[in-house]
Length: 85
Image (cartoon, rainbow, N blue to C red; front, side, top):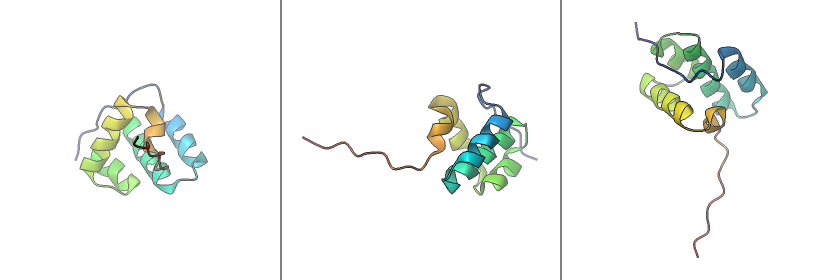
């Protein structure tokens, strides 16, 4: 069984599920549901399966979520490209 990984504590599993249910982006929703499973203390393999990803990808998303902008980092919305001068 895989060990659980640490997730920042300013979002509960319930918060992440609520945000996932409100998202129109299916990939963001899956990522948020996987992160909710991590927040509940489920193992990496189970949380990764919930999100439709492998354990390494889940680990990468957890690190991004912890280090960056929280749930917004899970979005797949295109960022505006910077124009070169």
